[in-house]
Length: 539
Image (cartoon, rainbow, N blue to C red; front, side, top):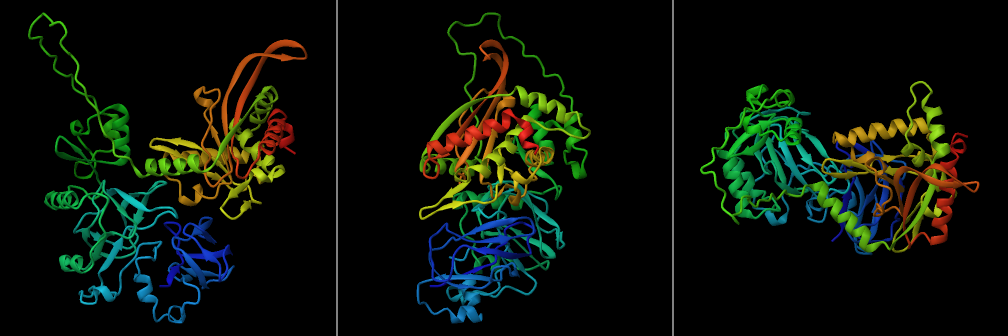
């Protein structure tokens, strides 16, 4: 059966997209995971991959043309299959209802398919909201917090919930107005994309009949556990629609995400803090101003301590893996076990770089780090060694003519890689400002998927932690990643004399499928030349 692929929503604010380039043509065989096209969104140009297999039978939007989200983009099916009804639109509704169609944005189910022909129609004004695909790689989402509760009035543009994707925690806004009638995924629960998230409609609508006629796909949790949580949620009285609940000793405590984070860092029990926000919600200042009362001292029951009696208590805590940790584990595991890694090491003399950095930073409103120098040097070296700026696929090696350098940033829950687009065309100060801005967004969970997409090479720096050298796992689909160590003061030999020098160790991890050892070595030679002579990067 032919599968209709619509223009996806590749960012949370995308309303229409432009096809920058088709990477497949009508008649080509398509495998799951193949890149179909490059689509320009409101934020970036992103690769759009196929979730289906078959033959590309039809292209609905030509290169350079734009179209709204959900417009017919392409049709995949069996070679020779009749798709005239789908192209003309008579079969589009049924095709959109097919389980194979991966909808890229919040979907409203408007018609019933043949299997549910006896189900009741959705009443006018009722909107069924499904778990959105907030990034191009998102497969499931976790509701971090609901900002509205059942019974609340919702206006178009209101933030309904904070949803944790595989890349970031993002605000999800409503595209409809009405009353929030039903919540399908509770806080802390995960659901696959397209599972019913919520229902909005006129107050008093019979939700039970809708749920019976439009069943949601099962969540990751077992059915009894999920039902128990729903029953518990119905019985609870939520004090504030904007509160993020925390369970403590069986009681629900409402606190902002920032307050929870600060409380966790300081070891403060939220149950003991009085909230000054709306309806007793705990906010940042409550945690900062909290002073714990002195704990009562324990009176000794006797003065003698028995010999060989355990005085401690074994304990542990299991923390549920969030979406970021799951994706990090999956992607790095796939990279390590599919790409044949090998490693090359060099030691760089940083004397000139240190002097140059002092001179550069003496200029007004200029701040350049050693990492900025390394990123610039990598971008320039990639220009001279395009083999390192490649992407492997089963049938071909893609030579990227653009240079997008990813910079690994450690965040509270793991690691993200914001991307400097066209880094070879940026100056040192521009790189420095961009890295600081993106790193700040990363730590505040404000990075958009577009800002983390499209890297062709990655830099990971642990030098600020005093790590002299280390190896990294390649960030697929890149062919290489550079590990940057600390600058170490030590004795070195110069002109036959032992003097005090400053050196930095670099380790390049490479995919042997695309880059041979000699090519990697030549890249490092060029990289060393740029770093040891920063003036060459200013030309």
